[in-house]
Length: 268
Image: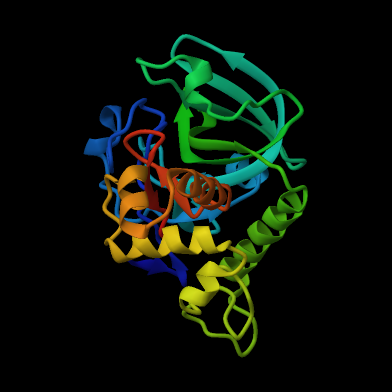
């Protein structure tokens, strides 16, 4: 796992729902694959204004630079203003107070829109989006991997603080006396400080920790591990695995791979 500026990269490459549609690990659609290979898939918390103001990274490529660094994978938090279901995708207009951007969630050809969105999302709901920055006809949007409704309003403020913190780290450096090799440095509780398994587990239930530990010990295969295997190997019931998965998904710690019952860790 590599890093730039201390911000660790992630194997959350082109998980299901990428802007090309369907699930292809590490794939890109169209002519992009011939332009520049993916060598940094860091997940970056950003505001919508940062996306709007991002500079093109390479001529003819749909890559962007924020704070002078290449950015492909982002997470944003905002309020849904409009929802436009279409044959091949659902387009959401998301507003986070700094700007408005379209988020496109491409549909599996074998699933309906209601089946693709496992949790109901309505206009005026606040959501968190994980996805890839895209540009089509000089108009930017986010090709969503995952869209989840926000249940805890504090997550909205937390995201804005996190995006601000990362922006300041890359533009002004880490805090005085902090460890320049890790965002956050020092002895703080930042999610970017490598404080071992205890830090990653902070706030998780016993079921969540058990499922996370098993996925980690199993080498976190890119194709993921099915819930039935997790239940069998950890001694948990299917109901416990489902509850643990929902908890880890809501934290952005894991994501679904081949189907809605197969999971892998979202490395940071």
